[in-house]
Image (cartoon, rainbow, N blue to C red; front, side):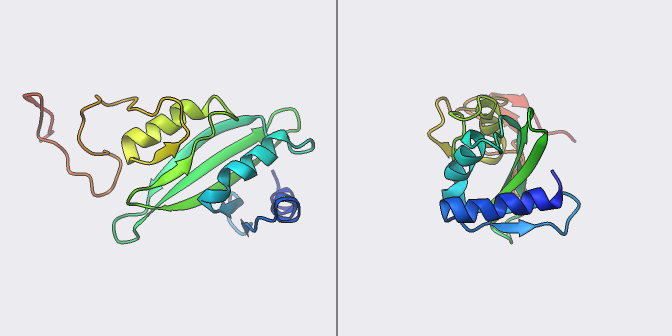
Length: 163
């Protein structure tokens, strides 16, 4: 999606939904900065509205900005395969008790993306039909992709710390 298309979407969201988004077009990959409480409304609109029809969720990425920043970023890459355009949505969450609405009802691919982020970063996705660990054992302590994660030395008597 080119710069004018991302800007057009930002303007349309404000006009049609009354939701203000920050357009960042002066970067290599333009994106829209949104609020977590607006995520579901925005994505429903982008998925269901003719002319946009974002039918494909490529991925959801999480970035830990570190304990000093106190935030996590969630980044959503969406595309419309038939209309051949895409967009990136970004939202910032607090590191502690971070929550975002689940998008599994819009895109089935959100299921595993959200579970992976829950497992490795600890973000809870409200409304997710099966939010549990996907890579690590259910009783694993902590979330290993957080910058303040302290690696366990043993798990059920097995040494796990590499030296």
